[in-house]
Amino acid sequence: MKVGQPTAVGWPLIALLVLGALGRLVLLLLTDGNGDTDNALQVAGTMQTTPLALYTDPDLSWPYPPGYTPVLVASNLVADAMGSDFSRIVRIPVIAADLGTAWLVAGELARIGRSQRDALIAAACVLLSPIYLAVAGIHGQLDSVMMLMVVAGLIAWRRLPRPYDLIVGGMLLGLAVSIKTMAVVVVLALVFAVGTLRRVAVLTLSAAAVPFVFLLPYLVTNAQAVLQAFSYRGLPGLGGLGLVVQPELVDIWLLGIERSLSRLEVSLLLAVPMLILVALAATVMLALRHRPRPELGAILLLLAVYTVGVTIALHYVIWIIPMLLLGGYIREAVWLQVALLLPVVTVYLPLATDTLTTVDAPWPPWFVHGVYVPYMIAFWLAGATAYAIGVARVRRRAAVPSS
Image 1 (tube, helix red, strand yellow):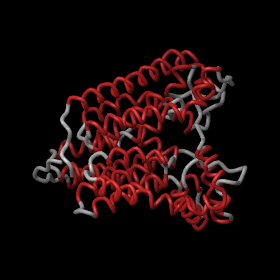
Image 2: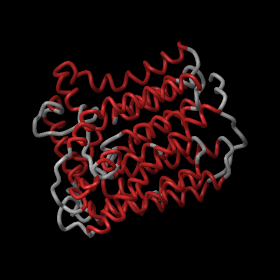
Image 3: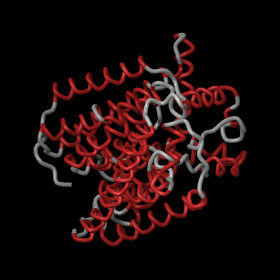
């Protein structure tokens, strides 16, 4: 990584952080809980009483590793102590994660000599991003926290001396994996840049140790239940290949109309693990040959998942934004924010007003099928095109030197 003279970001970054925090807190205060925060409360209660039942309780749904459950328990304890609503308290760590991600990204870009303007725009792509604002202020999903750990891990790898770059960076990435398994793609992307097999082993062991510790009690007690929980394939209809194949599934979410899955949709859902595995394998083979920078490798791996994923939810876009920013693709990240505005408003306004999946949702059928569906199909096509362009770019570029 070529490093120029450090750039000062100072007070403008602080102002952006304050603005981003205020925007999220306003959304938090204006909105109540949702199905995901209700489920998080149930998980927190289980972890406080019978933690080993996380994957065996038939009334509980937690398709993630257990790394985020301490945050849920802490949120529940704070909510009880303050007499506050858990659905609001549990969003505060997500808000904090957004602020941390923006601060780290801007600081890293400033450190390597990017202009103050670039560093501040990058911070704004997190702090003022439609999807980041909606997820932290309304939804409360854990993806932002996972990505904070990913960003911290990549920056640790860049900054720390050997062997601590891979030990600390790997453990931070492992913490991200222990929150949500999709962080594995960043570990894969980093493998191609670390050099020798010995360093690959250090990275792999460091990254694997953290989720292994979190999962060990559950694997010992009921490994089958853990695997069953991780086999969750998501819910189709709002984006991705599932929407392209059967657009009328959007009616479930935005019009409150029941729809049955077509045979093709069912087949694709059953094939999701294989589709993603093949897409990742093809991208890994490309990376093995050309060894792109970790950020670009992660971008390609994520675009591959977005392209073949049948149940791609809108908040999954959070995975790629920090990778674009750390990779220097700031203009692309800005345009992505613009492109996200319409779908974010379309999906998160019903979620905020508790009308998602009901007939009271605010959008008329002509808008859902005449605007949202074509727009999301075009969005999917844009992602597939970006993947093809990225592959072509990697093939043209010379291999990076070993770190």
